[in-house]
Length: 275
Figure 1 (cartoon, one colour):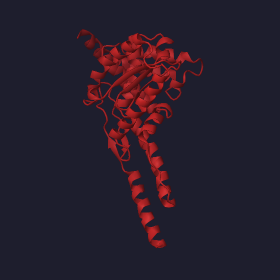
Figure 2: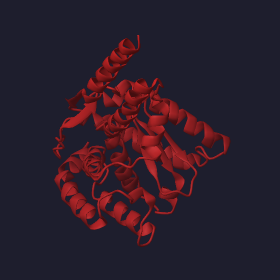
Figure 3: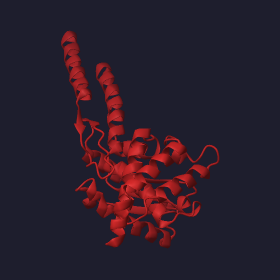
Figure 4: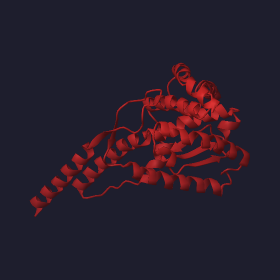
């Protein structure tokens, strides 16, 4: 019986190990006018739908906590302003993903001293009040930040990082099976950690910058505002800058890239303004 148990356990470990290796190339978005065409590899251990469900729960939990503190949408005028900008950006996400405008989008503003904004998988957006107030953002600049954050969701950057995280947890599960213990994945916790604890790579940030300026331009917002908003962000925390920029490309590199890509999408902006 001991030999049989070891054989069965070994087969289970081997099967899970094969599962860990089961990654596939995924085309999450069209290239758009700016031509983002990097091939992405996603693990079969995490699906887009499961991560969206986890993100929806994590988002709801986050809003619930902020509501209890009286910090959720405390400034109705600011909330209306951010939602109006989102209402113009969401339809043009179809240029990258035809399914995206039909996502269950949510847009809220949280009263906080943090200079931050984010978009969870499936279109769950939050802006912190300080990023608007302290940086005195124009609508074009809010659109630049929103376009950037929405781009992360369109490209499923969280799913890419989740694939790595789930693979690591599954690796622990392989070890656990060999030792008789068990490991599971909590998608809501994973979505929360991906948003607040695990930074995007510089590749992801550059893609989000480039897609973001195109989204803003298509929505009728001046894409050149992306340059000014990141200049403001770079100055906001002195020599270090805010945590929001901790893993982003260097300011000079980023600004040069944004200047280039904002010029490329300027015709889209001019076209949107004429409509």
